[in-house]
Image 1: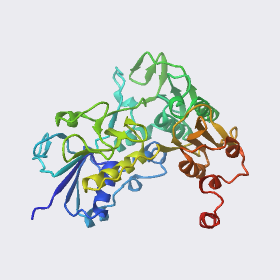
Image 2 (image 1 turned 90 degrees about the horizontal axis):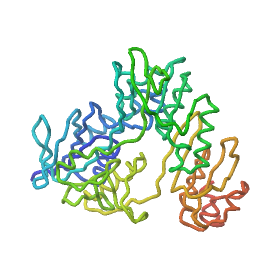
Image 3 (image 1 turned 45 degrees about the vertical axis):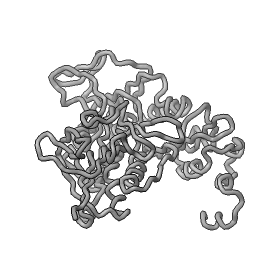
Image 4 (image 1 turned 30 degrees about the vertical axis):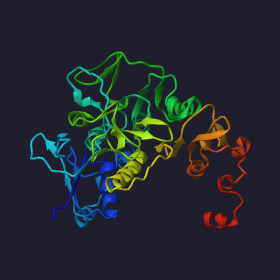
Length: 408
């Protein structure tokens, strides 16, 4: 009897998690992870932080240890460019090698950084940060005294700025919006992030639209100002070319249902590239966070195995900047209710939609995020949240001694 073959197009977080969960779920067919990079699956979040700072090396990045790959009979095909999937036969086709006959295919192709045109003789001075090779190229530039410009004050831009500034680099961040991250964490928390960076020596310029960027033999020139290097961090675009060539529905991502199915049988999509239907939101959403990639990898593995288990948890992500851990869950709505010391950067801001808790942003208070996860969607007394003496777990579970003993 021929073993069924499942192929992932993309070999990142989503694909690795899907492969791991297929094996955990008892799938004993052939699994092939196809990636266009020369590496086995690796974690991207450390690239802008620990790896770029030199405190972690490549060995700490791998998601699937070689022994696990061998023990679980998973094939990883690197440096391979998929052109399309034949929607009739399911064959995965390549530019320069024989196709792979597949019984199910998962598109986990991720995204590519949005680029800006930068004319001039030194393209090597212009950087993006998405891949391990990107981080390897950028890391040597982060030495004391160098002048680094960062265009874009999203989380990736601010993480790079924080890492570079901590390495002694003179960092200038150029952001077109008046308040960084305001659309994600709200204006008040965005202003706090601005203060955090400025207090740590970053020249963060808001409301600054860049009109001219070029390189010279020795520098990057941005609107007349010279820098030794430039990082562009203005978001990503989903990698949908092979999906389009395969006849899949695409609209700023591959359109899938709540568990990751496309409209073509036995073809799925998950992670950064997927625009998944969210029952919670009542619409299709595309989410670019590590946690979403992992959760959707689990959900789509279940779907491929014939078990529909919807993962539609609130969005959660984290960042580490200047020695502080930042976390966010849910959505930002209105002005947050503050618990803790806002000025000392030791607090949680809780967001409300009316009387209903809809989100939380925390600095150095990760446990509050765990509680907020349980409280989202409930009517909560804001005064209790402000009260540092109140046990927030009581709000989540009530005065239950058995729970309190376990939690302690």
